Each structure stands twice: as structure tokens, then as C-alpha cells.
Length: 214
Image (cartoon, rainbow, N blue to C red; front, side, top):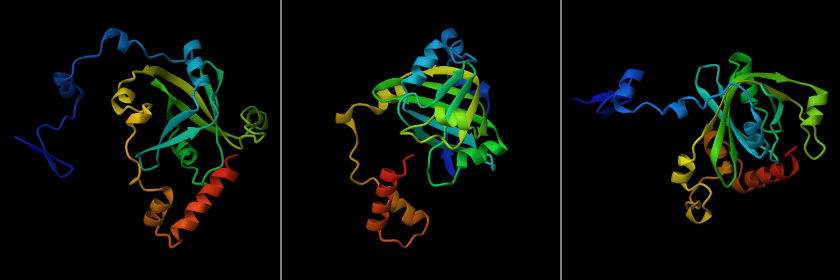
């Protein structure tokens, strides 16, 4: 008998770990044991090579929020084996990540390296700080970080490459046709109900990306 979930009929609505494990096998012992609680030498090397991290926080309403953060490789600094420093750069001033941390301090990061299929997952507790010395340490092109998110690390694990292999993420000849992908300008006009001409908005976005990265 089918069940209705969010308005569609499905064979089974799984709601417990026991129900899940009746279908999916248990992870192998080495997969279960790969989680650590600190940044070791191998994790340091991975973070030092990463120019991109996706940051997850929790919104005040309990929903999840994710945002990409990118800079030259190694932009997230390992201050010690349990503490990371993530610089904040100029953006659209929504400050969602920091606003979220004021309410719920849990934070997660997944580090990516172009051309490399494996990723590194880090989670812990986040805090927003302003510190001149730390800002200078995290400077790019002579521009210090105005704000820094400190991450007190509680969980670190490597992640297998299957998602990137399946998605052919780094195989340029396998990339999908992007001609019908909406631009940021198109989405702003539609979602924010803006009346600006799209050409003017696209030019403003390009100018901002060129002149206000740091």
C-alpha cells in the first residue's frame, strides 16, 4: 500500500534508523571509524590546497542554509588542531551565515579542490569575531578580512569521490549545456521583482565582481 508524502504517493515512507537499516547495509568498520575530532596533518594538507568551501548553518526558523566561500587555496587557516579561521569577504550584506550563528552556533564545511574528486567534511561550533591581527593574517591583495568566523572543530572526515565521478564534475568535455541556465540578473529580476533592465543589472554585477571582491 502506498503512502502520501508531501502530496505524492510513494511505496514506503522511512521515518526511523531501524527502517532504513532494514534496507541499507551497515557501513564497514573502517568507514565507521574514519571520523576524528581534530585537524590532523593530512586534513591540514587538504585544507591548504582548497580554494572553495561550502558552509552550512541553521536559519532561525530551523531550515538549513548553505553558501559557497572561495579565495586563493588555503584561505581557511588552521589556527590549531581544533580551530579554523574562515575570512568574510565583501558581498551583498545579507550576512546570512553570521546572522544564523548568532542564533544557532552549529556550523559545517565541506572543502573542495578543483580537479580532485575527494572532499573533506568539518563540523563544529562557530563564532563571529572582529580582530585586527587575525584580519591581517587573512588578508588578500592587501585587504584584511573585516570579520572572521572561528570554527571550533568537533568532527572531521574524508568523503569518497563517487558524487564527483557520477556527476563528471571535473570532466570539461562532459559538462552540461549551460545556454539555458538563468543568470543571477535574471533570477534577481524575477525573485526580487526588480524593474531594472537586465543588461544594466548584468553590467552592475560584472562591475561589482571586478571592483569589489576584497
